[in-house]
Amino acid sequence: MNPAISTGGRAAPRTSIYPHRSVRSLRLTRGRRWVSWGVAVLAFLLIGSFAAPLMALHSAMADRLLAWTGIPNAGWEEVAVFPGLEPGRAPLVPVPAFAQVTGGARLSLILGIVALLVMTGRYLLFRNLGNFLIVLLGASALVNAAFDTFRLDARVFGQIWLRQELLVWMLMPFAGVLLFLLPQPRLRVGLAWLALAQAYGFLFSVLRFVFCLGMLHYTGLLFMPLLWFALGALSDLLYLLLFFSISVHQAAGHLWGGRDTWRLQL
Image 1 (spheres, rainbow, N blue to C red):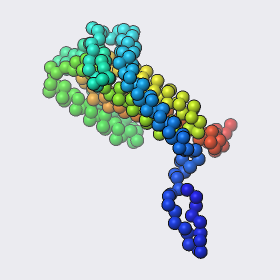
Image 2: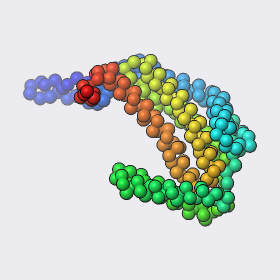
Image 3: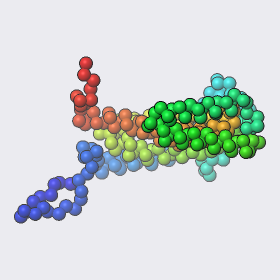
Image 4: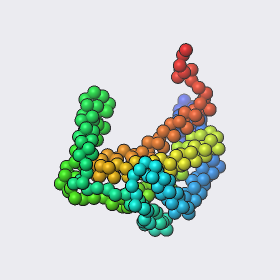
């Protein structure tokens, strides 16, 4: 890791390259790495061991929110998630087919496309994303009109949701090693960020799940592609990146101190 030492006017060959400047100030000792990966493996095993109680808590919180928001639910039914990590519980919220969707739901889809067209014309940075969302909504409208009697069972949706989120919960500790534990100069701070991200991901999953069920109940499958794109795995990635950005900002302030050029001059 040391600079090449000049011998006889020639640079001595190096057996390794300089570490990147983003990690040059971090004390990545062997013990720190072993502890970090050990924490990730332990968290992975604990989540796998208590997968069924975690999913039961997820369903219980979702049931409270469904009742509070007035979304009808005929009950909960056990579903298979992964072998050895089950059972989960999925709701029995009624989801109408396109032929049964109200005119207000169809109008909201048209108004959504119009709003996206206006935004893409006004904001250049939003154009690519806006066009993609317009394509999603347009394709959804065409498919629903062609198969107007097809309906999605909320039980199947709940099963798919639990499978995705359980994978996220179990893999997040390994991602947290790279995002929170190793970049933080103090291990306890990294552990706190990892625990906070894990807890927030669980609560955020409940909120997104209930919101998707409400949209499915009132609008059928009209907004399903948009919902899955915006509130599926992409949401998990975005909140992880948000927590990572805040934790790195905190770690940088601890290592190098605040920069006066970034402070607001009053």
